Image (cartoon, rainbow, N blue to C red; front, side):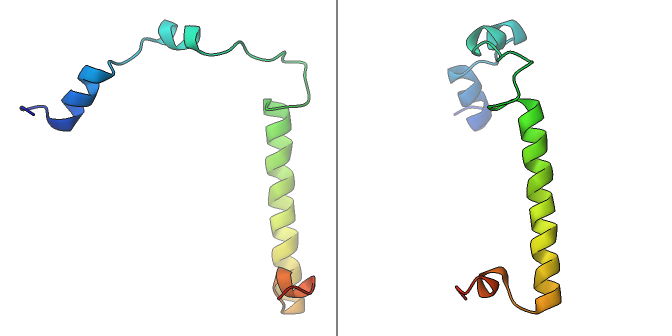
Length: 75
């Protein structure tokens, strides 16, 4: 493979893209006023609610001594 090894081989096959090339390949962004779909607003709230659910589940597990599956009758 030579002195560059696998990295050189991969870079020869897939040369690094310039920023303008990357932006041309990406689909256009959704309207920033949208509150649904994969937008930053929705993803931020999804993460916050997931963290809240995890903390509530952990708290109930500590208080009851049963796992989440045991609490709903599956464990």
